[in-house]
Image 1 (cartoon, rainbow, N blue to C red):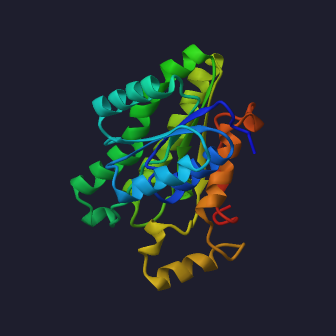
Image 2 (spheres, rainbow, N blue to C red):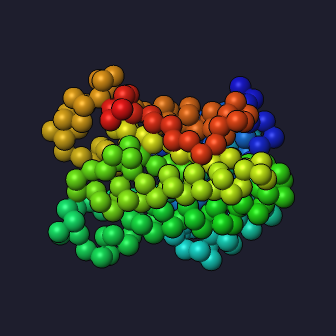
Length: 248
């Protein structure tokens, strides 16, 4: 306990699921936590209460992560409220699956905007702050399908592959300022998103995982803790798969 004492983390899409698990892990390890979600609803308020139990500063912000101006305003407000940003986790994401021949432009644009453009928005707003601080850790939440591709998910796969290229580029650009950028590529993680899949689809996924189980949000949060802490002080430009050896 205490790996993140004195740090301020900003996590997008953290009212539930993987983002919430990362926020809880960070707070447990001593970080103050700012998080965003599209709306601060009952679920987000519950997340705030759970985070506050660790005794650190916590605040949730309603924000459309895909909106460039809203992102700038939120980051400015986080700085006013917390005074610094040490860790940025670009976790906001959606799916709108469909085969390419049937995919609409709206499906493509929605996924690219929320999953990929949002990361650009937050990195663009946060890197000047981290540069002045001479340090920071940026973590993009990619996916195994961003590496391998997946039928019926060309928009999602493209957005997640884009997050990898973005992180690798930022690692090279901002490394001289002490800023690290990495990606986490989860595989089949038991979450609200995967719970919506038909049972037969989930069973088929399990057969492709050598560890023979789905991952948990906490499995991903543990890797996010490593990347956000000084344990990974010489790790940048990397993609860490959290997939139980699926697609390895």
